[in-house]
Image (cartoon, rainbow, N blue to C red; front, side, top):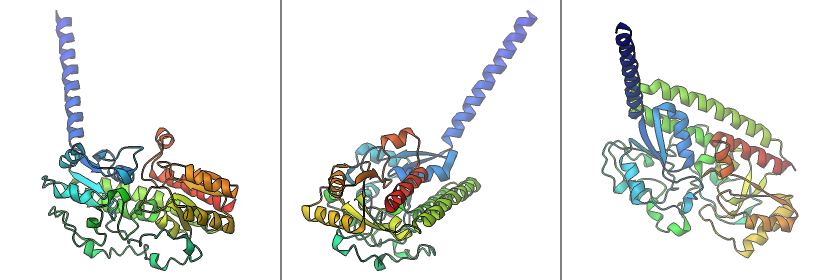
Length: 356
């Protein structure tokens, strides 16, 4: 009887311990910040900074072109229940004003990740100007990161969603079929240097929402900043040795990246569209490739490589993938590649093309 009593006692202790462990685990999970990110790179940046302190849900799923995505009631409800909603901004998410204007969660913190990025003017789809590489309109001093966008400082804490003073006018984005991002190049995240700025903005937002774990966010950001800066230095050294600086890419979204390393992109499609180019554009790209010695034509993994192959055939070249990081290919997802790893692959592919 004593042995049976002791066995029961041990069993009760075991069960109680397991229950307490499960309760602690549940409490730990419930304590995490619930974050909704607009699309992949913003989600990745948030997870890098937030670590185990955040649970991130992405509105635009893998393999979906964010330019053509439309918000549903289910998506709106996801944001309504979140602690933070983080989006890129700079006019990229044409639907964001409609979303924010209808939200009722007054405790929701709204974060525009690109609010501290000095924006470049949007590219006109004009290849006749390809000889002019001085990019005077793009000469913003990103190294100073002087946060001179006071006119964009919409008060997120007061949940003010009017954004009337933003330099990038979301009200101009009524033409969703044209994916008009407004007067600025909205593809800020592709630049490694911009990515660091955006991660810092996300870090500050997480600290504001969860000050008790400030040290965690600061530590994570410092580690990510070190890695991204190392890749930026590697890219700067690689591209400083290339003899050619022009490259043809499927979607004209590498403006910030090209600016960082003295390169010039020429898009098959414009920065604000995903469509078939006209014959004149095709002819100009073929002429450009022949004049500059381009042999590799890049395509977007979320788009079609048909036009890139047509140009490559005309010049006796080949096609390769360059990922603008608005999503990931199935292969990249399977390999578990994140923004940093894809950026590195982009650098290697582009360097190879410029030196072949």
